[in-house]
Amino acid sequence: MAKKIRYITEKFLHDKRLINQNLSEGYISKEEYNKYLDGLDDSMDNAVFMKSRLEEDTEDDTEDDQATNSESEE
Image 1 (tube, rainbow, N blue to C red):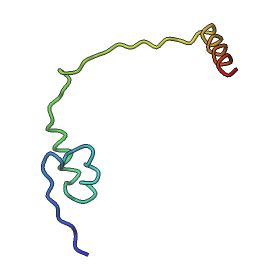
Image 2: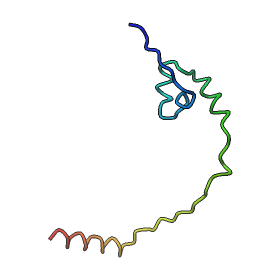
Image 3: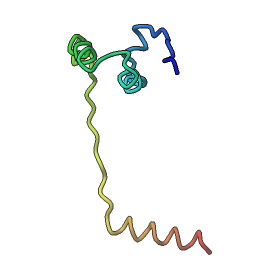
Image 4: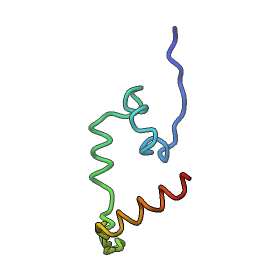
């Protein structure tokens, strides 16, 4: 059976959703892909840092949740 030939644009050759398929089908080598990744610009200057805070579940909250759940089951 002849291997299917298809044309892949540069945009899709390195697409992260298709890279595993392109590597396994031989459209790009691992070395070529690593070279491409090394050539990408660093986006650190565009990063947005965020702070988050997790609230701890207190015993009172747990009791309130259990009371609410038992009322809704009735």
